[in-house]
Image 1 (cartoon, rainbow, N blue to C red):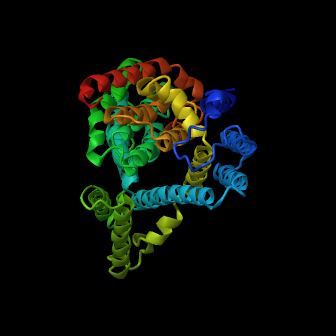
Image 2: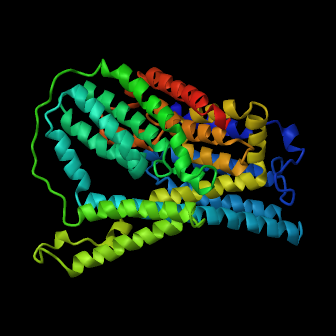
Image 3: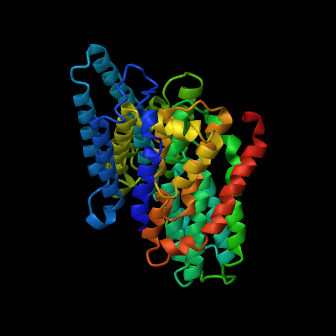
Length: 465
């Protein structure tokens, strides 16, 4: 039922404006055709709805989510291109330029994510996360102490590793520690999801949505720190409420002898250096951050060559690191899904639907209400197409409003277990314990944190509105 609701809300979100407005042809680019009431535009919308429905039922039909959206993206642009046949060279050139602009945006996002995911894979291969898990399991702490420790770690790891990776790492720790306490597992998983999403909201590296906002130059790198305290509040409010339900007992400590592989600390340093390089390229050189990330990938590749050429344990090949193998392990389904979503939503924007949505939400309701509503929708509909739609619409908003939509789109997904990649990942890791319904029982507490974080942002950053 919730999957059907997701599709319905997505359709309403796009089609809410009246056809009367569509007939006015109020496109932000007057050269492009307004296809909102044209057969091509309507067909494009139907194609997108079908593709998104297939994404929603991915687990049931066992079709990777990238496949339907990639096909839909191509079909949408083909249908739009057919509508442009015979309209003249000026309009054909405008359509071509629009496609190239979206391709440029995706290209930068793709390279950025490719490097970030490769580094995360390398850290995993060097057993960095395994050592962290071992230390936490053997710390001999109470359930309540572990509840807070895993939450705090998730909050501060997410800005660098992204919310999905952070949730997976902390989720394995929670399952290993709380195998005999289902209540601890459930509450800790909810806490980790909220913490990972809140932590990812104040950093360009914490979530795809924040990364898109940064690369579109809506907020500078350090500007995201303005929502640090609201993000902390978003995490703390439900955590404080839930902590009283966490068992007081202390689980039996389990000791394992796991050590990091050779060069692990250097990889951590190189990852930090890569982030610094990307920020420097963007802030100081005014070049795309992805160029700095690719330079950082060069750091890792040269270091892996050094490890291979100068082994300390010649008879232990597992001590070597092949950077190309880590690139091969990148989650290509996710990267190709982004391609399909960005081009499909971009096609709907070219057809004029995003301008309609912009007028309906931001024109009629105002930016504050619109941004809060989009955050709530992100609990049901993936926040990536929502944020890309907002960035494509590019409503006239002050800096405080761009920070608000970054905050709400980032933490709104915590309201439901299906609202974020972190939640979906933990439902798989803690299968049988952490479920949609177990999370729903505490949605009211998460909602209080959501409201409190918005209020804190509106108060603390009043000068930015």
